[in-house]
Every structure is written in structure tokens, then in C-alpha cells.
Amino acid sequence: MGFIANILIDVGLFLFAGGTLVVTSVFAVKAAVEVTDVDDWDKDDNLKKAHSWLTWASVAGWISVALIITLVVLYLVFGLETAEFTAGLVAKGLLLLTLAVMVVTGSFAAVGASFIDKSSKSSEAKSEGAYRDAIIAAVSALLGAAIIGGTFLWKMFHKPKKKGEEKKDETKRQIEELQKKLVEEKEAQIEAKKAEFKAKTRKLS
Image (cartoon, rainbow, N blue to C red; front, top):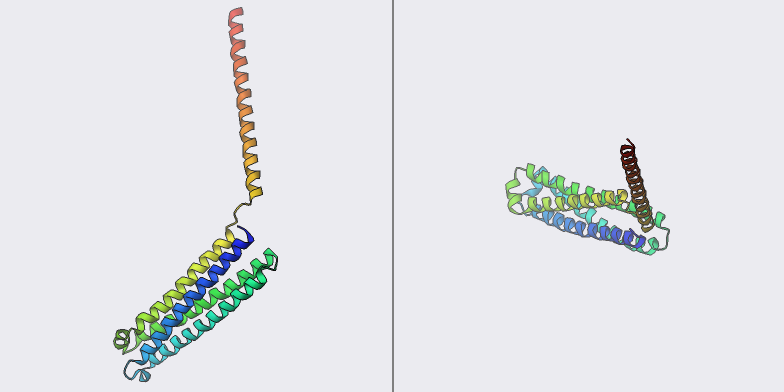
């Protein structure tokens, strides 16, 4: 995989993370607003906690989106001007940071959803759509983090052979086949000589 291809994959992952966090933030805000639509929500400790966690999830999400946009711009500006090894290390660091942010944001939304479910007014909150939207926010962030984490691990351990290595392997394979063919021919010649010797021996006897 070439240097430019790696940069394109990294940028794609950043953009995917940004899009996922936008979805998470929108649904977290929506869920927080829907919590306030429940009558006397501010008198219910669980709903108050849910509102707080969802608000934090939304804030963390929007800040993360702005951060990712900045990181992508900086990566494109400086990544193309640095050596491949250095750019690779920078990309790995930024992806790990993005992954951590997504897990944190998704966890905040999940905690908010759990408080909605624990509330004595959970049925009202669910009817307003707060629980559903909190779950969507949590799942989108955590699922996105899982996809990015899986891709990150694949990039780390997947090392495709370079063209030079492929040619070297092909040459080695051809040499092995030639050696095998020569051995088979020699064995055939030996067997033929043995058969000829046996035939001569029988005639003499």
C-alpha cells in the first residue's frame, strides 16, 4: 500500500469519524431536549442526570467534530511534507485520539440513556423519544469507534508485499520448480540405467 493510499485511508477514517460524531451530537441534543418535554423532569433526579450526561455527550461530540476537521487539515498540510514513517506515526496518534473521543462521547450518551430507563417517568420520556434518540447517539458513536478501531488494527498488522518482494518470491518459486524437475529427470535416468543393467545381466545369464 503506497504512501498516498495510506493518507487517503486515514483521511477517510477521520471524515467517517466526523460524520458519526455529527450524528451522535444531533441525537444527543435531541434526546436532551426531549427529556425537558417531560412534565416536572427537573424534579426527577434520574432525568436531571440523563439531561446532564446527554448535554455533555453533545458538547463533547461537537467539540470533537471541530477538532477532527482541524486535524484533517493539519494532516493534509503537514502529512504530505513529512517522511512516510513520521506521517504514519502522526496518523496513528490522531486516530487513537479520535477513537478515544468517540468512545467517551458514546459512553456519555449511553449513561444518559440508562438514567432515562431508571427514571420513574421513563415511560413518559420514552414516549417523547428521548430514550430512543439517546440509544441512537450511543450506538452510532460506539459502533463507529469499533469500525475505526478494527480498520486501525488491520492497517497496523496488514503488510502487503511490495512489487520487489513479489518478484523475488516468484523467482524463488521458479528456481524450486526447476530444481524439482532436474531431480525428477535424474531419478528417471537412474531408473532407466538400472532397467538397462538388469536386462543385460539377464542376457548374460
